Image 1 (cartoon, one colour):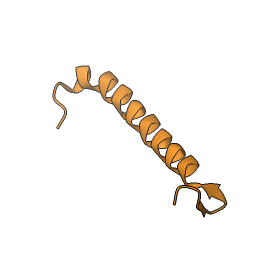
Image 2 (image 1 turned 90 degrees about the horizontal axis):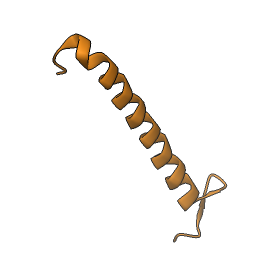
Image 3 (image 1 turned 90 degrees about the vertical axis):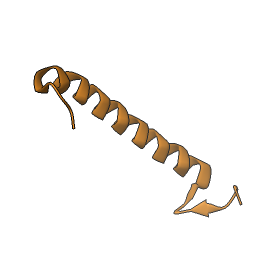
Image 4 (image 1 turned 60 degrees about the vertical axis):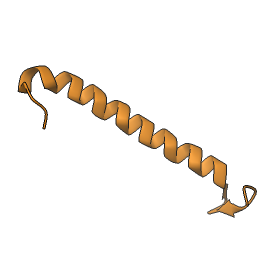
Length: 44
C-alpha cells in the first residue's frame, strides 16, 4: 500500500529520493564521460 511506511519514511518519499540519487549519479557520470571522451578517443 502506498501509505505504508518503511524506516519511518513514506514509500513514495524513499522512491523519489532513490530516483534522485540515480539521476544525480547518471548526470555526474555523463559529465565525466563528456570531459574524458575527447582525450581518450574511444570509450569502451
